Amino acid sequence: MNAGVIAKIDGSLNGLTTSQFDDDGNSVIEVGRFTQTKAGNRVVVGAAARERNLEDTGYTIRGTEIEEVSDEGTITEYTEFLTVPGEFVVVSSGDGSFAFDLIGRVGEADIERATIDLDGYIGSVESAEAWKVGFYDHDGQADNGVVYGDDILGDGEFGGVVDQARLNQLGVTYESQSGETVKLDITESGYLNVYSPGFDSLEFADFIAGSIAPFIELS
Image (cartoon, rainbow, N blue to C red; front, side):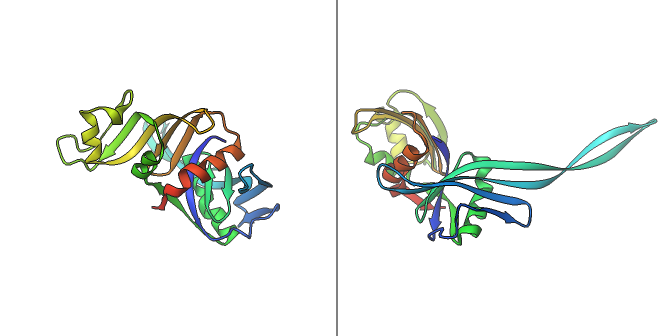
């Protein structure tokens, strides 16, 4: 996993074990493994699924009349997740946000989708160059928008706009302390996608813990 939606945990998630948990027969958490990362973070990796009833309304022709018809069915939603208990949970997509509530109930913790302080984050990364910037609450004709380019924050004209606005999206590239090129996309609403380097799930957990977690806030 190298992309997903982040949530903040208030609690320890001690209720998570290697068993499957069935919630009224409709939801299941499957914990795949408990492990420790190279940075020493304790990580739980697993998957969650739930069945949801879906009613679809359509139309049919009966003789010379048009009739409205409804059809009920069941869909199964699925997501992978990883968590550093007591710190954060990440699900593999926005559609997997249902797992936050399920994991919280099973683990006896409060889990809430996080917001990211993007101003604080970008200020912490030396030599970061922004290739995408989304902003809002700007006092001027350009109230909000998304801009693409090279080193946008270093642009003398547009940099002033960003200084007077709030950030809700960032695409940045920078060189890590180990000399690797990091390219990522992050939003204020908690979505993170690391394009490079190619992290596995444990490396992704360490990256969030070290680089993103200090700027996670409750939404």
